[in-house]
Structures are given as structure tokens and as C-alpha cells.
Image 1 (tube, rainbow, N blue to C red):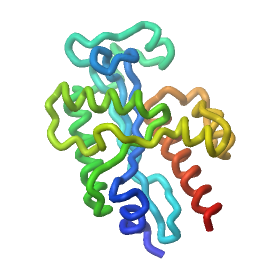
Image 2: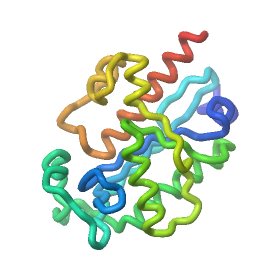
Image 3: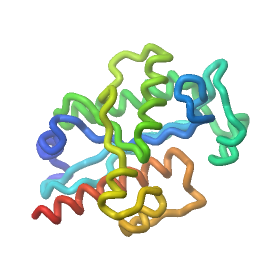
Amino acid sequence: MTDYSSNLMKNRFREYLPVAVDVESGGFNATTDAILEIAAVTLLMDDEGMLRTGKTLFHNIAPFAGANIDAAALEFTGIDPDNPLRGAIPEQEAFRDVFKLVRAEVKRHGCKRAILVGHNAHFDHGFVNAASERHNLKRNPFHPFSSFDTATLAGLAYGQTVLARACEAAGIEFAPKEAHSAGYDAMKTAELFCSIHNLWKRLRG
């Protein structure tokens, strides 16, 4: 058995490569509010057609000039944008790095584009697209409007839409104290998507 099967992945998702993404922000408005963290987790498929997590990339991000940050959002995430230990990098640099990884994985699997996997994916997708447009980043690897939403999929598969509860129902370890970090939430979103996909695969035989 090989480490992964690029052909199975390509054929399973119509030449779109699923990549889990989580964004932590300073509010809900993708156009005006700061992106404070981003993480991406790529996926692999084995010769049996089962998904598992692959590479992970995480960045703390310095708010773009003029970005809005709501105090309520910071209280919710626990992020301190002014903490010098964050090692935050410019938003443009962070997204170039993420896009570079995703494009490489798309090529590796012989796919034509990536498709974003997110928990309440519309939120993360909106911020990714807004940052891409803000910095005029060429070759955004993600489909411009389609995505896989694990909140919806978990509601169908496990009867739960909250990430922590969906993971619990799926038998995935979840530490509430680690939640609302982009790195942690992206990994749990990826694991949840794999669990749902693999459950469907087993049920279909």
C-alpha cells in the first residue's frame, strides 16, 4: 500500500482537492475586520479510498492597515494582537505562504483546484477571498464560491453542528481550552471531514 493515492483523490472530488482552513478574525465582516490567524490542513487518501490529514501550516497575522478589531471578538478567541511573542507576519505574506502550499498539493494530486473545507465554511471562505482581493494575489487556488461545510455535514452524519460536539459524536478528541485557535480548529475540522467521508465510504462498501 502506498502512502497516498493521488488518482483516487482526484477522481473522488472531481479534480478538486479538499483543504481544511480556519481563520480567526477581529469580527464578522471579511472586508473590514482583521485576520489574526490562519491555518490550513491538507488531506491525503490511501489506496482504500480513506482520508487522513496531511500537511499543516499556521500563521499569526498582523492586522492590515485600518483593519477593524472588535473587543468582543478578542474576548471570544483570547487573542492579543499586540503581544510581541505572537511572531505575527503581514497578511499578504501569510496568504502567499498558504496559497503556495495549497497550489503545490493541488499539483501533487493532479487536481485542477482546491476546495475549502471549513466549519461554517462561508465565514472562512469570505475572509480568504477578501484577503486575496485586498492584496491582489494571483492564482488563488481555492474555488471562488464552492466549499465543504463540516457544520452541515456533521449535522447530517452525527446530528451535531457545533465543532466540539460533532467531534465528540465522531469519537474525535477535542480540548475546549485549545479551541478558537486557527491551528487547532483547522486540524479538528480536517479530522471531522475525514471521519464523515470515511464513514460514508464504509457504509457504501
